[in-house]
Length: 84
Figure 1 (spheres, rainbow, N blue to C red):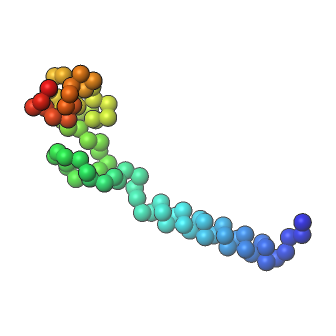
Figure 2 (cartoon, rainbow, N blue to C red):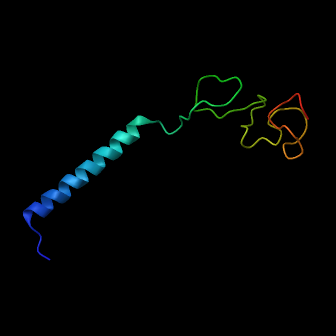
Figure 3 (cartoon, rainbow, N blue to C red):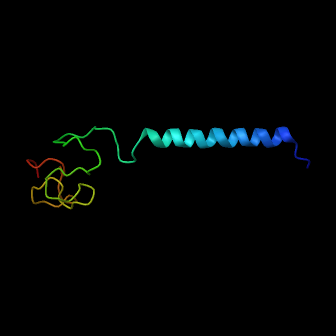
């Protein structure tokens, strides 16, 4: 296969467009931002994980995320501290 100058230029333009697109997309977010759809108190800093019961353990890893004393797997309402 013979490589011509126009093919090399075309590949260079495509590579430049791809690199430019990747740089533009990476500048749009910091990697931590997520939409605020949860209910509860938020400090406004989306880089910190949510912690419903303020015990220092993020909800994702908390075995009792609402702090009512009932483990999530046995709690019928694991996000509501007033209902067990």
